[in-house]
Length: 542
Image 1 (cartoon, rainbow, N blue to C red):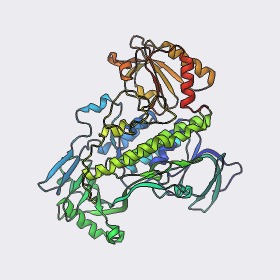
Image 2 (cartoon, rainbow, N blue to C red):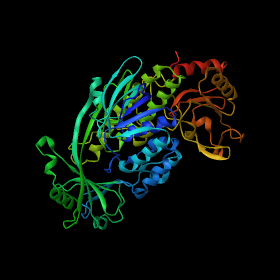
Image 3 (cartoon, rainbow, N blue to C red):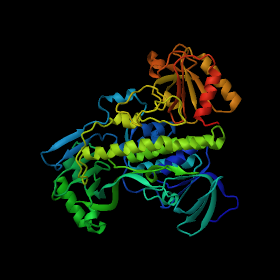
Image 4 (cartoon, rainbow, N blue to C red):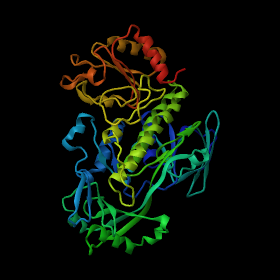
């Protein structure tokens, strides 16, 4: 790798795991040139981080990769629920929950659904799609150093195989470089939270006969509580490939070397209750459950995303989902600023929006680990009321300069989820007919701000189109009217206005990330002036 004069890229991404690759995918969809470097030689080979929640799958849907992800995850498509048992063959069996979406209620709230796709299966899909969109992605390449000034970031990169170096000038740097982030360390950004919660060793193994003991119990994970060998069992293919998470006590002097193949074999046999189980240990990887959130999500032109910004307990699969949603929030803001239709102040809202969500989510993840009595986590569940899962996944709210009219003192995550458009919240799902096609309202949001107006909101619609022509803001305007098939027509005469908290002559402004930026319940005497002021505020066009 040699340096070239004038080697410049708008965005440099450091880290090519789930969050870094998602950042590349989202930037590629927005047409933003970028370079991604990852120090490892290839994508993850270890089956971990499998739970992709409905909000993440909505983002992957609009990015055009939901279908290939579900294809990659097809082997686990019928796995649901979390089982707790003394052993697989014992008498104590309890489903902590049986179905992710009992009764199919989620289909009324979203065009997508949860998806179990392990990291080793998901990352190749993201990598392939990101490269097809023009992502310049280099594995086996590490960030050696970086410096920033008022105009950009200068980074030195090194090819780990050849030793060749390259100096790159970037307008912005996104650090998705993991929990021990060298970028965060260089920026001097501290972290808050409880710190380490517990430690596990993830053991991958093959055992053909284990499927007989599991039977027809298609779980996501089974917590095995035998006090002689507690742990968590996860299927990889429901047949012969499995993962066992064994508690690890480094604070008590236990080392990774203590987890020999022979010991791992005995731990798995005891935990499962199959004493003569024939198995082959194929890999071991340590992992640490923690509660830490960065005190800032960046400095100057450098931003943190994913594990560099927050560490969370794995229970509930909150960590990777929160990181992917970080990337989505940041990507559209970088695109808007780089293209000139938003002011640089928009990037300051990344910290203001995502950090409170991470604080609330990390606390909920730790509480959920206690509720599920995760092996290795010896903490009693709290007694206070916790937000429901839908509230955590779909109900989190933003309060920042990129939102007008949000409740000023509301929590980042409310106790209950309300599927109604409110400033700062996720725009709701509604099935529509557009040019003979069935689309979700969520399919309209990704690349540009969108103005939706009701059947009597023609004045808002016309004002939005005039503003787009006059200012260059790529505002896309849609009028929703069940009586006009050439417009967006809700299916089954659904009430668009009620779902969006407006009257028939109202309007809703939705950001490219699918969050409501502003809402007008009714008509306005000067819609063009009002909407111009709102857009200038939301996009920091001061």
